[in-house]
Length: 232
Ligand code: MN
Image 1 (cartoon, rainbow, N blue to C red):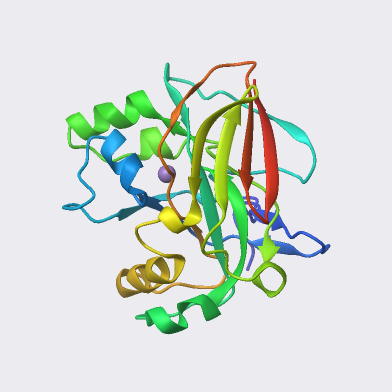
Image 2: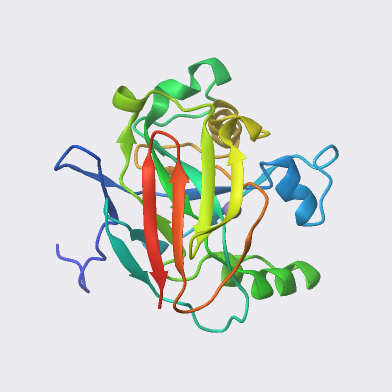
């Protein structure tokens, strides 16, 4: 038996300090996981818990260590926003994973951007439609190399920041997350059977905003280095 059309490529992410690649299965994203960002988006973090949505695996964009890469500005938006996020990658899956065991499932961590066509997302919210046009654009998940937990541990605190053309726009601490990484894994695994290759964007802090063509974004997380993208 053969496939009737060419098989789609596997999205594969570089691993810091290794020539091996990390194959991606699914990409989950957490919404409103920092209280100040929930408020800037019009929510009340004391009443609404974080929630999940997804991006397609092939919307990820590999950002190699130490390079500035071109990031294509997507079509159909006038308000394209950056969201710096800690990204968690899973080596093991499971259902109903207890919080206390959740971190045993992590392969490693990376810096990611949940790039968002905010005008299309806002329109979807108003019309009570789903968020894909806002959240799932091609290239909408730039991602740096994965740092294995065996080397960097499980970062629960440390600076997370994003600057545009040298001006800091987002600056917070990983300890500000409402749901910890372990809680995110446990919660998700009660709705879906998680599997090796799953990726979780852990939510963005306050200060999200728009970029235009020609601007350069630098995203940093303490212990994970930085990623650099020029919007073209
Ligand atoms: Mn996000």
